[in-house]
Length: 115
Image 1 (cartoon, rainbow, N blue to C red):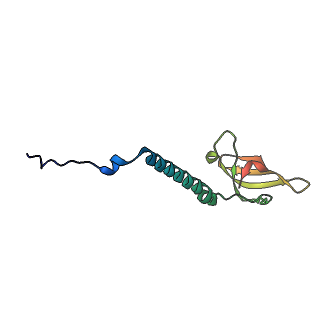
Image 2: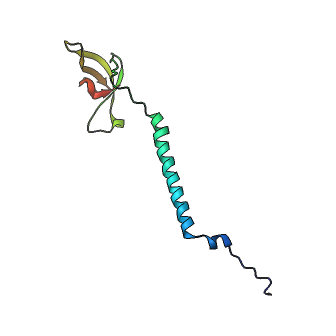
Image 3: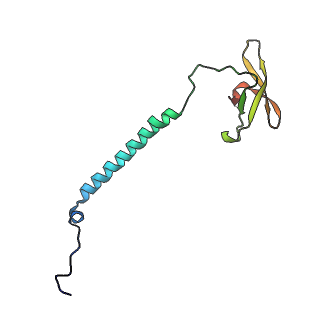
C-alpha cells in the first residue's frame, strides 16, 4: 500500500462548529416545540371541548338516558339510567328524579346525574 491510497476522512463542518451556535439552535428548537405544544392545546383541543353556556338549563324529560353519579367511582364507571319519573316541588322546580338502572330503580337528586 502506498501513502497515496490512504485517504483522510474528516468532516470539516462538524470540526468547526462552535458550542454557542449549537446551544442557540437547541434553545430555538425547544422554544419552537413549546410554542407548538401550547398552540395545539389552546387552538385544537379548545375546539374539541364543548362546554354548555352558563345560565342555560336543559329541562329533564321522562325517558331520557342519564349517567348516575357515584363519588367513589371514575366517571367512565358511572352507571347509565333511564328517567322514569320526575318529582317537582310547589315552585315547579325539579328536585328528585326516579331513575331505572340495569340493577335497580333509585330516587336521585336532580344535580347528581348528567344527561
